[in-house]
Image (cartoon, rainbow, N blue to C red; front, side):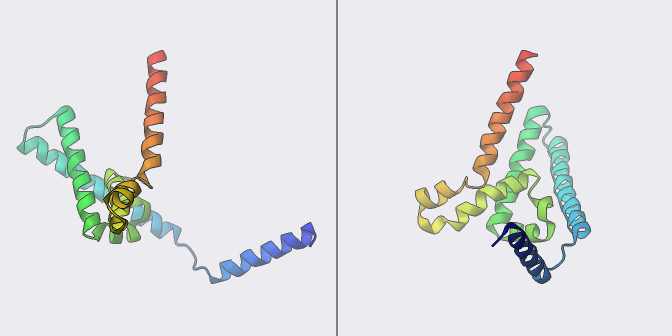
Length: 150
């Protein structure tokens, strides 16, 4: 098969595959992601205001407690199977906030629980979140070093 024949074959195959794939609704997907991500952030802001008003928290304590509550809610909704349904409809809008990170840690641990606590749940927990944590720490260290040098 010559290079030109291979190129035509690839184009024909791609056209054949695209004929079976449903068209992507980009605008609808972006709108759902924006609305759900914004709603999650609004819930976080509401929690922040309630903690500030009723518990009198401020500064780092307020930010930390808000994050802990959002992580707990994301994990709880993942365990109940609700967060997966939200993710199917919202797409990236559900994975960007901190609740999505909680979901990415919790989901594999639930899925692989049958393999045992060490080799299943504990080992698989960071399959998705592990690279995020590693690159986050590296990026934070790099930015800190640049800040220190400036």
